[in-house]
Image 1 (tube, rainbow, N blue to C red):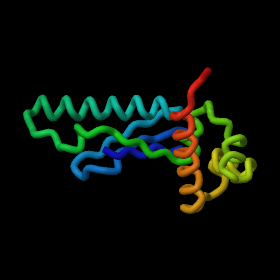
Image 2: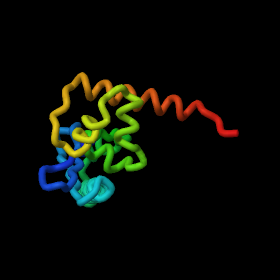
Image 3: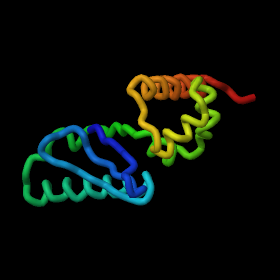
Image 4: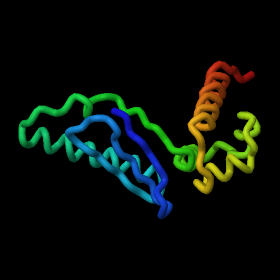
Length: 132
């Protein structure tokens, strides 16, 4: 199941499924962690209801969950990232990265792709390193 996590205009966060047309699950909170927890609570309640009424559970509700983040939510949840340093690593102006994090500046699809590809490249580097 695909789940999107986004920062709302009031500063709260929302998590909602983007797949499955039978059931809409929503979780909210003051942090990404709270929104995810509330989302999982909603999922548990829906699964419990299906079981109680003896109805077939839609297949997508049993799929592994794949999260997608907007930039603000990503940096809130993975707060160990230094936004400015990551911007320099990605070849993006650090000040612009901070604006993306705050949600003050619209971000193009091309820039999103550059950030996502760079984070995946960094993850690959980290996964292959050894400490001595």
